[in-house]
Image (cartoon, rainbow, N blue to C red; front, side, top):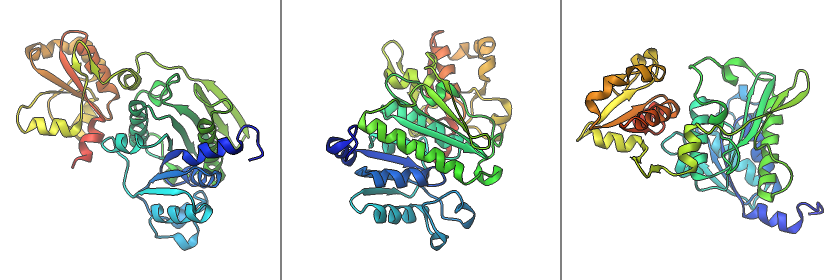
Length: 343
């Protein structure tokens, strides 16, 4: 209250604000603590896991008494002990490409504390489509990074990393290990960025990726610009329909309903190994080969083509490329992640 940049007006803004935190683990724990303690009026938590004793060195919201309990319940109880006036929305489920839009669209801000790439990309894409600023952080061993994505003027996560890396290329904390203080540092940075965005003060991490190396105790940053060809930004910040071509996307539930009656032409633009591991069907034409193999689709120019990939990034680019050459092509929103979530 004594800070000129906050005061009574700022404290009222915090009380009226709503923040969704995806993941109540190493990053989410300190972020949730500080959001509740600062007076944020409504906090949503998306978490499906249970408290494990091996998590306690980095998930500081919990104690040994909480081991075995659902994190969502333990986190809610802890936040209400910190600040009994906060409204806590508890979502004991996994965030997916299917439910991300509804969850994130109901809040002013979203903080991503997840540790899987599927969730990370689902959060980003829903953030862009619902115009909900995203406070991002990730951690590994002795280092971490943070930024703010999904604003009107800045880049999104896909502008920096267009597609997820191959599975198991980058281990999560459980597999690769992490020094317990690292997520506390990055989660606290996330809370600070969220509070600044709510209050409209200071200089945010929009357009900047903050790199933290705890072993060297170095804080560095690199600039991040919006990618004009980013599929998430292009379709999410403008419109979900094209005035010339009609819809540019189809959701997994919509596709499933269509396949019961009029099966569209399916094109998988992933690599062969991904297709053989799991697929919906259709023709396999990897994105990198689309320009030289598009002639294989000449026989279906009068039909709708549904392009799909792992999470929607490659398929959005592939569908756009096909539309520019006269095809009636749409991208499966959320890709195989969204499709498999229906099972």
